[in-house]
Length: 362
Length: 69
Image (cartoon, rainbow over all chains, first blue to last red; front, side, top):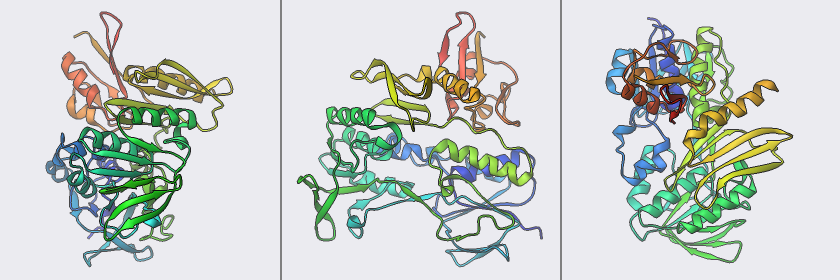
């Protein structure tokens, strides 16, 4: 019997890989192995609509059962890959089974990192998958004291959702401002002020120097001397690619990789990556890379970034920061390197054109 | 029928949602989504809104105004 193309990982990259293979006419056997007990779903709403209870888990599914049936994709749920023998072209699964592959896509994504001081406590949660989101939402009762460690996009999105649910929210950010890395300190400082104005307590330049409690953390001590009481703690300091199970198998014959496991981070990269891995497998030319970018919803405002602010030496502002209605251009030399839109979705096409013209002219 | 959709070829990531919503208007068999036909305004708007990459802009041909995003 012909061995299948096997996809390990039930995220967006794996799903788009499967879709592209079928769309491009691949008619061989295709198996998708998902560690979670649910079919592939859309992750961005986990920190927003799902956490807020306005969308159900089933509404997040990328494709319904009929799609997998119609496209002859064998979906195996609740099985985690534990090891690989690239010579035998075999993957070991957590349920004891071994699957043989003709070609393999590694798309196991990334796992949230937890600071060492927070290991081993019952009330320290992370947010990456559906089960995490359900666990967090169960604890976000009105009045619950939520401490978010890490002021990145996930941390800030959860902060906004939790405030709307009536929780008391404290954000602890080690850098000089939230989102310092992707957006720079000046804009990061605006995010800190804005979240404070919406009711969050935001500590910046703050390390966790101690925790107290038994099985659950009841209080965190920060390097600025503050003590923060906690009912639930969210570790949101970033993710690490889930590479431990496959060692150095990427590069072995017939092995492809896509999505966050490759060290990329944003949603669009995973899509493009999954589709391109399928093209690579079929020997077709790769689709061009889109400009870098992301979006984030916080307190009902949509933020959209096009381009990469890294290395920009100045920013210009159009609009009103206080009203959350603005566009910020990051300049590198006399060229716009990136544009951040807040509450201006209609300007996205023109922002993309401005960044893309610069890119193609370079 | 006054609405005209355009696909931003750099932003399109071939999710295929537009073609799911409006198979007579969009085709995703190539490198990027293509506009292959036309249809009712609300179908065009629904397809544009379904795009996870916000790669579809919609202009009202009567007024020249961008109506989405």
